[in-house]
Length: 634
Image (cartoon, rainbow, N blue to C red; front, side):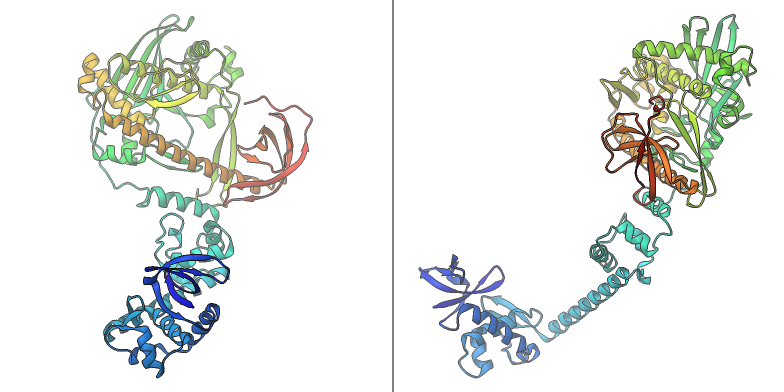
C-alpha cells in the first residue's frame, strides 16, 4: 500500500511501512524511512508505484485547462478527491486524483486553498484582479529581462540613464531598474563600478570616484546657502606687529601668521596669530551646525570643499592688508639659549603685512642661505630670529623625544593645469622636502601654539580636545596628555579654525580662558565633563578618516594619470615590506605580484604594464633588482 501526502509544501508518494493511530512510517524508494502524520495524508493507493504516479500525475496535470476547471468547480468549498469524480465522470484513478490536486494547487489565483485537499474557487472579481496582477508581474519580468539583456550586450537602457548613478550609493533594491542591473552584474561576473563605466553611465573613472563620494557625503551638494557673517571684533585692540603668513599659492583660507619684535639685544617677543572665526560661530548656532556637519575642509588635488561658507572665510582669513580679529600667542624668548621667558594669550586685531607663498620663496630661503648669515635672504629681519628660536624649539623637543626627527621624506604638491574633474587635465607632481626652512619654521610655531594653548586650557580647568600619543597609540581625548612623537607635554589642535572643527571648538575655549582667566571654566561654551565634547571627538575621528581616505584615493588616481601622461614604461621603486613598494618619483605605494623576498629599502625597477584607474592600481612586474644603494630611508 502506498500513500500520497504533503510535506513542507510539496507532494510525496511513498510506501507504507507501519501504521499507528495518528502516524505512519513510510519508506522511500531509496530505502530511507520517515515518520509522518496521518493528517498530512491525501489518499492511499495500491498502484502504480510511487515514482510512476508522481510522473504521470504531473504530466496529466499539465493538460488540464485551469479556466475550465474553475468553471466546472463547485462555488463553495470542496474536496479535490470528490471533485475528481465529477470532473472525470467516473471513479478516478490514483493518477487522476493526484493530477487534479496538483493542478488546483498550482493555480492559487483560481483556487484558494482551505485545508488539506480542500479548495474554493476565487470569486470572479478577485480572480480578475489576481490575473491582472499576474499579467503585470509577467510584463515587469519581461521588461527586467530585456533591460538585463541590453546591458549584457553593452548598452545602457534609456530608462536607466537617470538612475544609474544611484546604483553605487543609494540603490532602490525593490525597483526593476536595480534588479535588472544586478542581474546583469551577476551574469557578466563583474562589479557594479566596472559595468557602469562600460555602459557609459559615467564618462570616466574620475567622474565615478567623484560622484560616489559626493552622493554619499554631500547628497544635497557642496555649496552653502548665502550668508551674511556677523560683524564682530571691531572693538578689539589693534596689535602693533609686523606679521607675515606662509602658505601655498592655492590657499585661500589663511589661518595663521607669525611676527617677531626685538625687545632688547638677544630677547624677542614672538607672536603666533590665528584667525578667530569662533567669534562669529558660537556653540549651537546655525554656522556651528554647518561646520559640525563637515568637521573639516576636504582636500583633493586641484579642489577643496571648505568646512565653512566662503563669506565667513573671507571675513576672517588673515589676508594681507586687511585688519582681522585674531587669537594671538606671544612668547618672550632668549635667542641665545632658547629659553621661553614668558607667554601671553590675547584676543586682538592684526594686519598681516604680506601673504608669503612657498612656491615663490622655497628656492630663495634654502638651508644654505639660512645657515650663512651673510647670504641675502628675503624678509631676513623677520625670518632669521624666528628661525633661530625655531631651532631651539626643535632641540628641546628632540631631548624629550630621545631622538632627532627624520624630516627627509619628500612631500609632493599636486598641481593641475585644468579642471579637477577632467582626467585630461595636466598633472604636475612638485616635490618638496618636509624639512624645507619655511615648512619647518611654520611647523615649529604651530606646535608651540598647540602645546602652549593646551597647557593654558588645562591650567585654567577649561576642557578642550587634545591629541596625544603614548606607547605608540595616537588618540583624541579631553585630557591633557603627552604627545611622545612630537615631544610636548600636551597638544591641542588650535591653529586651523577655518579648516578644522576641533580647532574651532578649542578656539572658543581659549577665548574664554584669555578673557576670564581662572573663572573661564564657569563661562566657557563647554564645561568640564560635557558629554557633547565626547560626541564631537567620535564624530570628528570618523569624518576626518573618511576625508583623508578620499584625499588619498584622489591623489592615487592623479599619480596613475601622471604615469600615463609621462608615458612611463619603467619606474624605480624601493621596497617597504614583502611585495609592497614605493615609487621614487611619485607618492605612490603599490604591490608587485611575485616579488621575491628583499630587504627594506632595496631599489628595484618595474615594468609598467598599465593602470587601473577604477581600482586605483598600478599594473606592473619586476624588471630587475638594482645594485646601487637606496636613498636615505624616510
